[in-house]
Length: 244
Image (cartoon, rainbow, N blue to C red):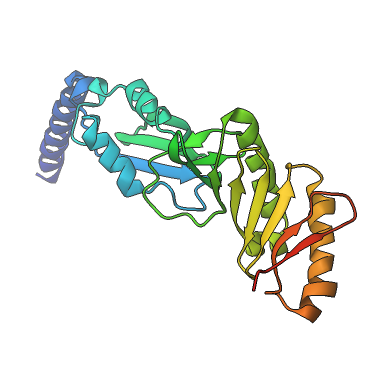
């Protein structure tokens, strides 16, 4: 009797297994639905792109894959959409075996905030790429004035990179103003003076000279005595007294 029950149970289990196997084998691959999105964002220290904004972009462009048949999701369309954003360095989109859509985005790294009289407001990265439509606040040196063309942008990038690498000047300089002659004026956080840098060359020697003047001069006579400090010329700081 026990043997008969065992045989019947085995037959039922085998039959159920065959039915389930046939069901999955005959199911079309396209019936698999996207279960969600795996978003990874790198080079994003300043939080200029969030996972929430990635999902919002997908919905705005009608490319949200969630719930769609996996075979109908075109990864290249999603990649192209994100690669068109000025804040994105590169985007990779792929399908996973878990029926997820992977979206891996690498962001550009802005180094200076530009207010251009002609082209409007934007950021620049170290390669000179303009980054627009940044929704979150990024605390970077501000550039303003007569920003005319690539050479001026290159000069601003050179100064911004110098500030990044030098903690003292990074904390001291908050703005770079470009004159009509394409010369640079630095606006410090401490002191009511302007720093006339001239051209964006010899930054190490010019600003090292100014730092020594701060330590040996302004620390003794006061930081509000002069309205302008010109460090353009070699081995000298030309001071303009404030008008009384």
